[in-house]
Length: 391
Picture 1 (tube, rainbow, N blue to C red):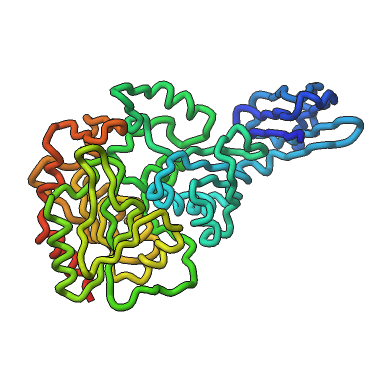
Picture 2: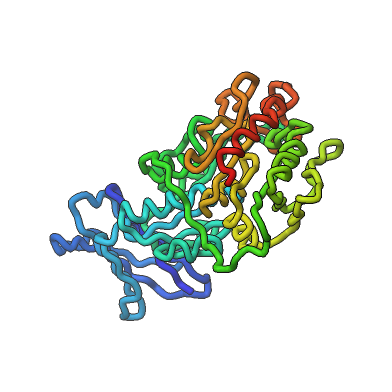
């Protein structure tokens, strides 16, 4: 299938014809200024070639393509920025949820059609019906759009085995129209990353997700809990924390529903597991997000670390008690949340501009403080936060 890729900018207008090499047709291309009626440039090209004119300021350019005496493509500059492609690079559930409402805000602010790739399209498509969701993550295969954005972290996150390559990161982003070509994710909140890339004001926006109509099957009052993460520094590393919290909740008539994907997770010598008990309901396992949403929606609160399920809870509207030492409180959302951290010990390395996170090192703790940032968060402090949402 032959496709026509256009770009309308103030400094140039561009056309590329993409197709199968078996297409041997000639394509006669004209760049016409509708204001003056002048043909600014014309040429004949084949498939997988391009053509452009420089400087389109004060002009109203139409690109017309004729093949075999038929007009096969025509597009006018008046449609500039009418259709925008956005791809979310991160596979993290929390990142996708955090950034989703910013894309919708861009759509409304600029009155454009959005073609969007996320790793969780099924989670958003009913909640954002004005957005066209696509399974195409590679922008090279998305054609006939006027702008392309890629929402993802800056290069500081991509340190693997002590190798950092910001130049290659910047190079891979040159084909996008991001409002900034470089930024430091450590200095802003998670949701602000999308606002910065899209050129929007940094205003917190509560996300939406598609919520099933099903009711909960859990009887009585309960809380949902998620303890697992992808690196040890993200855990609540107080060895007695969860056990004492679960005891408190049980004494106050709460069921504790554990909704992590993995019952045990970690690395050799550092596996993490939630406590067991008579009022603990183990719902760990690879269950669909629709089931997690129902569990969260009808809970009195979500108690967790800085995790994707915390962001899901925020989107569903369930209050969150977040226990986190490795991020600053400004890193996450600010509404419908009680944030538990200890400012009197080493903390907030995720937002420290001098630290490069090494995702390949499960026990990463650059300042060698043995995860004191969360070890020093006491059960009594979390319990005081939980009390604020108890019914």
